[in-house]
Length: 146
Image (cartoon, rainbow, N blue to C red; front, side):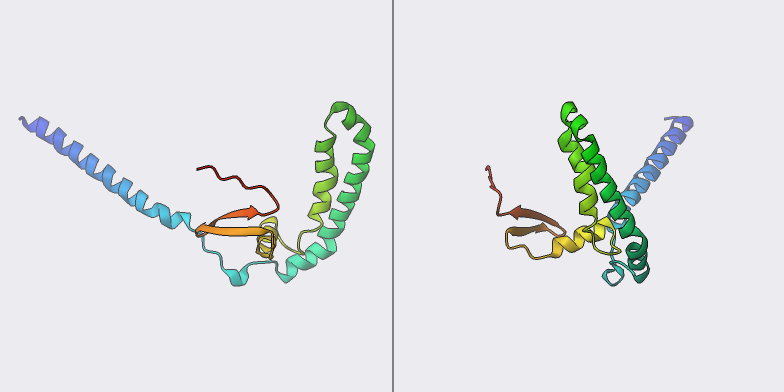
């Protein structure tokens, strides 16, 4: 082997070693970046968000829900002709009134969390692998295929 061939081989080996080391370093960092720890003592609405939601948010939601209901009623004949009455009902009537039921000062995620923690005798919760879980509503038919 010539000196030039040995130098090329050494450079290739160094490049391969650096690339392998970097990929192992990045791969070992992935689990640390994937986990997000939630401080449960700071979880939930604060005093400020509750006051803002009570004085500004909920009144605006009420105005939006009433306006959505009025728009739904006005657009109902056209929605029936167009065949999208169900979609108009969902977006203009159901969703605004459901938003009024969100807990005071809560974000959507916080409200979903609090509602998921409520006891429901018709709901079977199977913890598969923390935090993964399977929820089965016993009011529904459940079919398990092998």
